Amino acid sequence: MTDLIVKDLQKQDPGSELIELFELELDSSTTVYFHSGVEEDLSTVQFRDDSGTLRTYTAIPLQAQGFKNDPSGTSARPTISFANVSNTFKNSITDYENLLGAKLTRRTTLEKYLNSNPPVEFPRQIYIFDRIAAHTKTVISFECATPYDLQGITVPKRQVIANGCPWIYQGADYTLNEYEKVGACTWNRESKYKAAYKSSLNGATEYISLVNLDNEYIVPGTGESGAITFSSTVSSITENSYYTTNTTLGGSVRRLKKDGSIDTSADSSTVPNYWQALTTSSSPGTLSDSNAKVKRIRVWDTYSASTTYYAYTDDRYNDYVRYTSGSLTKLWKAKKTSVGQTPEFGDYWEPGDVCSKTLTGCKMRYGFDPISAGTATSTGKANPSTEVVLPFGGFPGSKKFS
Image (cartoon, rainbow, N blue to C red):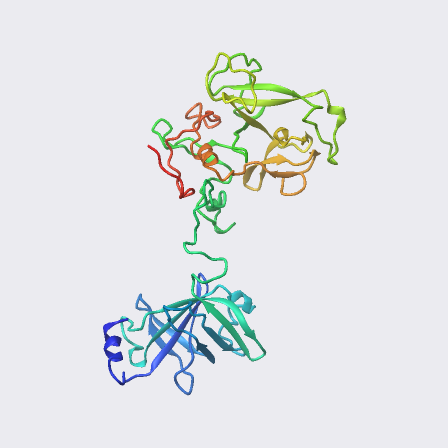
């Protein structure tokens, strides 16, 4: 509130009529300026915004009430009613339901200050169109709410979730002309990453870091560029090296047919387990998920329409493929045994590169530490780097340790 209006309010007669102006944001680029009319001919009025631009407010038939401030009670929920014959909004909307959630700014000033520069006005009031209170052939009425008084909306807007990231995975990497950017997770849609958190990596080489929901790296299979060699000799292990063991089908792990039934013909055959050593050991013991010296990893192959991809009763053995559609190459995991089923959302495939929403999953991506720095096809070390700083506030409740 400016000093000029304060002085006017101290007088018995401010010497001018109170003017009520409204600004309704229909979307990020469209704002409607209107008022209830102060002249018999419903002429327009003009008033400046903070930038000095003179805005024209169109006079339309409306009734606004309930705009009061009562600090001792609940927040005001004013209503604003428009004549249903008005064309003010109909050039911008096709359904009044689309106005719900729109931001309404109420500005009030004295008529004599309409052409003032800078604008002289009372404090602005901001509301949100919360619901349609009435809709008849002649009137449409909206009930407004303060921004912090909407159902399902909390202040602060973003909640701190213990040990969980609230952002949509890869949400900030989408371009506006393809998808709407959502949240702050900047991880690349194809899991490409230029490590630059230490000088030896320098951020010049673009690597691929694929991680699944179980926080396991997925590495290239035989015949793929950068394919690694798995050793079947596990009497001793070396940190970051890769090893393989076999599981015999027919016990706790069974292969599935296309219809989801057990493929008994596969019983007694074996499926591989793939491991990466977390440490160097001359007596690692049996390699398993409970062995703290190794970590399970998966392998992927480039999708081929002529190859049969298998699913199992234990999905840790389901096949992974990379498939290029349009300009994007993404990782897919088999949901069902199939052949010739193109990787896409549906009955046969699901995304293979999925975030666990944990610090571990985030660290494995942004802390990707290539075994061969400077080689684009290099896989990552078993223990991701802890030097990297996450580029977004994914875990606001986490403590920092030195």
